[in-house]
Image (cartoon, rainbow, N blue to C red):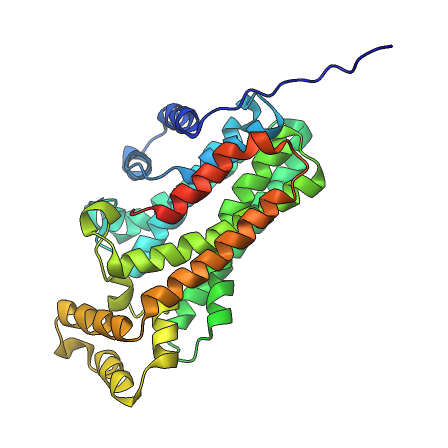
Length: 335
């Protein structure tokens, strides 16, 4: 009788994965000229951040394979792509700060932000293109679809600024496209490279989708209720830009006539009030309507849905400990 040899997967801790991410990011450099094109890219990548997307790529891969080296290029490509989207988002939002540092269009200028962002997108595709050949078609199709969906999400986001009738469902679909699909893509890409079944890869995609929705709702909350020192950007930015966040959509739905009139006056005569007045007014209305609790309840709903997807994985549940831990960290974050 021959006993089947079972390979024991050595799981990396979240801290070890983050160390791996930073090590690999430090290897990304550009020798090309002109330096004025590539310096903003290096600056953007040097600003740090949570690095959650490449970390999730490695972690998903590690569930199925103790060797995560095959996932390096796609993980780095996805992180470069994510930072490209932030660079252009900051430009479109006219944001002054990102991670407590000047945004690229403030440190340099608008044209530099556009062109360096374009170069970042190309660099991301170059990195993804170095994925091992056996996985390249699946990964490239997934990445390209994700990139297109993110553009759709950004367009919806901009269009919603001019509308006062955005529904909660429309908003959830917008943040799914703008934020959640990239997190889902990172997990599915890592799973594919690790050798997961199509079924498990899809469950991890759905897990990422739900976690991404909860993640963005947490971001909406932090923009109003966060600490600017830890949040890394100015508090109230979404309010000042008339962003249709989950908080504002529910406030518009629940507000009485007086509260609606107060909010409308800031939209109709924006130059009449100081930015701090607008932020204070909207925050007070959110407090009166218990919008914070409503948002947290929606976050908890998506978090529960995410964990249910993990339960459906065929992988050894003992290998999911770090993924459960990271999920909890994301829901408790302050930045």
